[in-house]
Image (cartoon, rainbow, N blue to C red):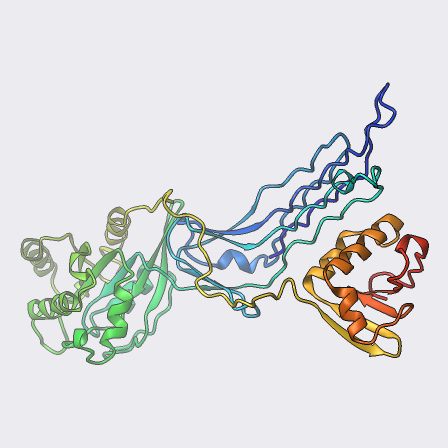
Length: 431
């Protein structure tokens, strides 16, 4: 993510008829555009970032004469699905973006430079220098998606959830004729028209899961993020168990776990309908509609029977999310603070008669000014003196005429005389 750089200030003087000494009227440069990450509820994955991983905001406009300021461009919006975790491994910043409409500014645009009108004083009424705009923030970010499943498939082990997920979506979960073939949630995407839903295959729940039996706590924690539950019930269990008791077991575990799982809307899916006679299937659907008081669908992952009806029911019962106005800019949930890092500086002797000054504030001072301009150099020297850099150099053994390097620029510094009298710059950036 690279924010836009700030626009440059301008050197300009008012020139009108009958106004021989109009004075400076250079406008300021505009601030560079920020980069903002926005949660878009219509997205469900990070696949779009495979096509491009560089995002650059626009630069601020340059100032003009007649006190005209440069334009500040709009923020560059990078859209991500709900549940995205944005991290900067180097700085330690982290944003958890879970709700539609949340947004976070991850790269700030550079500030614009000031025009020459800001540097006019009673003794220097016609300054012929202005500031340059600063570069915007640039950083590499890691995006991780903690998928918020819209609907979850729950049920006992070997109830047919994985086969159903494979039939409904393009997911390819492991399918076998023994229990616990799924040991971690598997996700698939349902698509219809311009809408996407995430369907999660939650590993089989067992009796006592709410108390931690098996991996109950981990499995049920995934169910908490769902907005609709599809209870998959085997019509003809291979172990000869009673489907009614199996239904009661799973519902009891969901209720005992709490966290609102008992209140989530339900769909009951009677799986493996191809293994029982059609008349028995119809009777079972009628009986379960009366018993469970929820929509009931008989499906077969082998033949595809009832799959389309179940898909339509999932789309109808999962409400569409809209960005709410209550979600504002999100501060970083984790941030590393380094007090005074931006204002501090360090003076280092790098050789005989040679010194290097490092510090964010000092580097910005050099970056803002044209070192080839004698007036700008004089102003820079005054700022270095007021910031205590000259005093720190003298304490480190500096003598007038020694070489000083700041922000990659090496010059001969003589604090006893103004820069304007000796613009003996030896090199530019990168020297």
